[in-house]
Structures are given as C-alpha cells and as structure tokens.
Image (cartoon, rainbow over all chains, first blue to last red):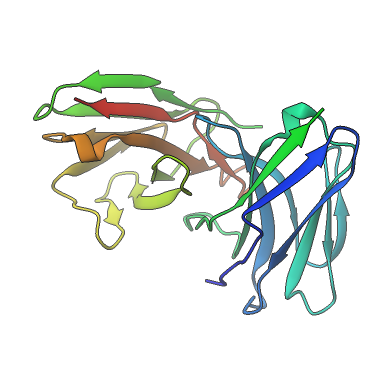
Length: 111
Length: 116
C-alpha cells in the first residue's frame, strides 16, 4: 500500500478556499486516490475520488498531476461546519479490500 | 448513498464483562465488512476483515480471542469485546463496501466503548 503524507493541521477562515495536499510517492498503477472527512465521534464520510487529472463534485475538487505522486483536495469557500479531519487514502478500489488510514489533516475553520 | 448502522452508539461497562457491537448494512448486502478502532486524536486502525459465512481475518497485533467477530448474514456483523478492560475503551467503527452498487466503502456512525 502506498504511504501518504499530509500536513497534520491547517487553519482557515470562513469563505476562503482550502487546499490540502497529500504526497504519495509510491502510488501503484492500479491505485486510486480517495479523500474522506471525519467529524468528532462520527464515522468517516466519502468526499471525492480520482485516478488522474481533475475531478469535481458538489463539495470539492481533486487535482492530480500527471505523475500521480501527489494530490490536492480543494474545498471552495469553507464554512465553520467544514472543521474536521481529512484523510487521503491511496489504494486499489476493490470490494473486499479495506481502506488503510493515515494520520489525516485536522482542518480548523474560524469565523 | 448506502447506509451502515451500528448499535449501540455508546456503551459503558465494568471491567471483565463482555460487550457486543452490531453493524448492519441497511439497504445493501455486504459480503465483507471491516472493523476499525480509533483512540482519541488518532487515526482509524483496521482491526479485522469480516467475511460472511467464514472466519474473520485479523490484523497483526489484534487478539482474535478477545475481539470476536461474527458475520452470520449479508447485512449483519458483530464485534464482541470479551473480558473488557479499561485499555479497550475506544471508538469502534465498522464499514462495508456496497460491492453490488459500487466499491465505495461506507462507514457506520461508530460505537463509543468505555470500560470502567
């Protein structure tokens, strides 16, 4: 499994765009990049997934360069409710295969 | 998306007793479910992979005789913490992949276990 490295914490203010970068130098050909969000005392929630280039959904964008050795989760115009831990996971997206979590990034949004 | 529930959401027990936690996939069938443990301010740690109708596969360092996992149906997996001790106090989270719908892994809301 490819190891991931993320900043331990980030601070932001409401309305700003937040970019969280994840490094995964040993990503394999079959690996996907997936981001989860976790609030205190809750289970993680899927945010976005990608393989290469850019992916966008209603809550976030995911930028993946051509070499796929890193990725950036972009949260547009964050609010207080975006305060959470964000996990970057890299691995094969297969049934029966567990997701392995790294340390994650604690994002704190202030008013 | 698919929904995974857990019961109870929290439990307090005395040291030496056993506690059972249920994990259900409410609107899909899950051949495989996963159990994680999370200590305060730490990441999720995979404990075991639970396969319907067969024995669970435990991660290194997880005592299979202490953490009994049963996956008797395609919608239910249970984790029993036997002879619980204060160091077993943690947040236990299950998850399942809705393989027939997608490979996305859905997580339950977690169960807070406190052993006195």
